Image 1 (cartoon, one colour):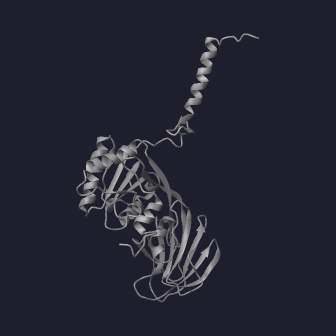
Image 2 (cartoon, helix red, strand yellow):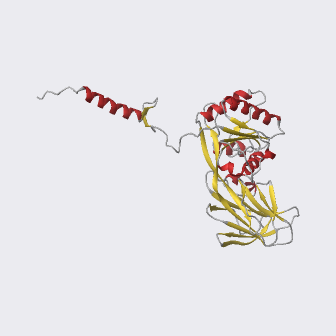
Image 3 (tube, one colour):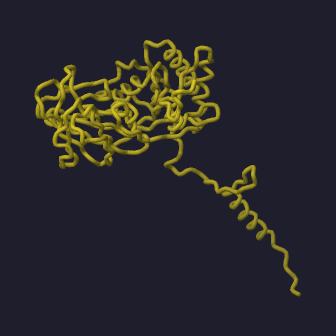
Length: 344
């Protein structure tokens, strides 16, 4: 029987190095199972350094101002450069502010208005919404501190999560629209563009064209909603449209009180370009963006609408002390999905 030679010192060191490399790629859980671990994040996954913070809040709400002050104080203690412009000071066409992170405190209306007025910055900075109004706050992952809650401690938990890379990023896709022959620039909206009648209760006649193919020769009704997936839970939902996950990149078309019976809400691929032409001239018609900005639409004029080529990045903290609800949780809690209307 051959006598086995003992491994040399060099061989021992080599084997030990192999074992250490294998251990660095494995992790034992409490149950004894073994999972593969990523040795390190790729360059695309490395957390971006947050240096410049833009804080925007609903100015006529004391609780929102209190939350903004707390966030500003803690951010400056952490070494961030903080700018606190009034919402009216933001200008989508000449915004000189720079930021790695934008925190918006208020209701859904404040959030939508802030994003439009940020201009190109909305596609460059990360966006975090903090709900601070009596509305649904459907677009906000976080809530404001309660009146009896320590606002500084609340803000500390948020920045602990953000500055330690304990957050998720979601790409939300808005829409762009312009009136052919009138607008040089595209107008941007997160939720929806609506082509409809003005104040007089008369029907409008609209033609819908998708990629140079006429889909609806004539729609008689109150108008037409073109929304993003994010906007599917806004005006479109109340008009009978479906609920879409905001992470789906698509275009949703929903008629408003259509007198043309054979037309239903439609979900279209995001590459599609829509053209809505006004056929009637018996009432005033408007093109509105997120229900906040409006432009008159004359007889024979055409609105071109497309999915925005750039997304906005929504920040959702996910630490133990500061977590964001899932989209399904939001549907249950804020829209009442699955609730028994007879339950007390």
